[in-house]
Amino acid sequence: MRFFAFITLTSFLMLLLNWPFQPKSQGQHLQGPLKSQIKSELKTQFSNPQLAILAWAMATGEKKGLSPKISKEFKLLGLGFFFSPSGIHFSILISIVMFLIKKCPIKKLTKCFQLGFLLLMYTLPYLAIKRIVLIRLVFFLKSWMKLKWNLSIEIMVIGVFIISYFLGHYQESPIGFIYSFLFIGTFIAFRNHSKLSLILGLCSSQLLIACFGSGEVSFLAILISLPTIFIFTLIAPLLFFYLLTFHFIQLNWFEPILKTFMALIQFESHIVVGSFMNVTLFLFWAIWILILKKEKKYFFIAILLHGNLVFAPTIS
Image 1 (cartoon, rainbow, N blue to C red):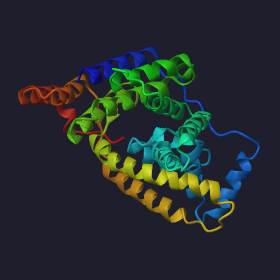
Image 2 (image 1 turned 90 degrees about the horizontal axis):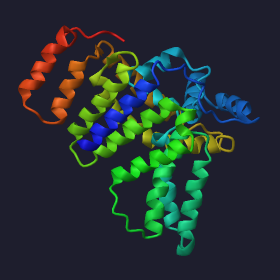
Image 3 (image 1 turned 180 degrees about the vertical axis):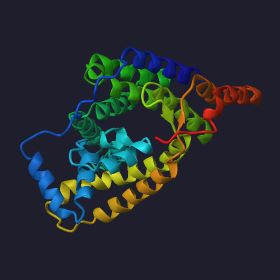
Image 4 (image 1 turned 90 degrees about the vertical axis):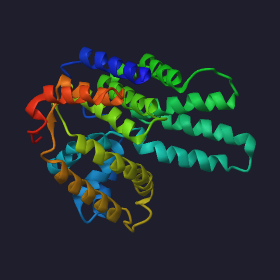
C-alpha cells in the first residue's frame, strides 16, 4: 500500500496547492471551421436532438446545449468525466487498432505502424489522451527496443507523469493532471488486489476529491459507476466509428445504443439520490482502516466518531 499512500498524499498536496479551484475552462474542444457544420449535420441524424448533443459532448467535451438535467444525472454518479475525452474513451479503441496493426502480414512494418498510430493519437487536443499515449509509448519502446529495465510499473507510470509535467500539461490543466494522477495511480496500486480492495481505493480517492469539492460523497454511486464505466468503454469506439461514418451511412444505428445507455444512467441516478453523506476525516480514516486490514474495532470507532452523518445522509 506504499504506492497508493504516495499517490494519495501527493494528490492531496497538489489539490491543496491549487485550492480554491479556478472556474473550469470550456475544455479542449475540437476546433476548426467544419466543427459547427458537423455538429449541425449530426443533429439532423437523431430523432432526439439531446441525444445528438450528448454524443457530441462525449466525443469532444463540448457540452453547449446539453440539458442541465442530463448533466446532473451524470454528475450524481460521478461520471462527469465522460464529457472530457480521456483514456477511458480511447482505451478499447487504441487496443483494437494496435491489435489489428499487429496482424499486418509485413511484420517489419508492424512496429512502425503501431508507433505512427500512437504518435497520431498524441496529436489529439486532449491532455488526458496524451498522458495515456505517453504511458503506452514507454511500454511500447521498452518492448520494441528490448530494453531490460528493472523498473516496476509504478516507477514507470510516475516517470510518465514527470515527463507530462515538463511538457506543460500540469500548467495547462492542473486539476485534470491531478485527477489523472490520482485515478491511474489508484488502478495501478490495486491491479493485483481483490475487486473489493479496488473499490475501497476508489472510495478513498473520491473522498479526497470531495474534500476539495462538494464535501459530499456517495459510496453507492461509486459502486454502481464501475460497471457503467466498463459499458462506456465498449460504447466509446462505436461512438467514434459512427461520427466518422454518419455522413456516408445515413442509417442512425447508434441512437438506440445511446438511448439505452442514457436510460441506464437515468435509472442509476435515481437510485443514488439520498445516498450522499458529508465527508469527514473520520470517514476517510474508516476507509483506510479497511484498506490496511486493521482490526475491525478501529473501523467501528471511526464510524462512531464520524457521527450521525452516517445515519442521516444528505441529498446532493
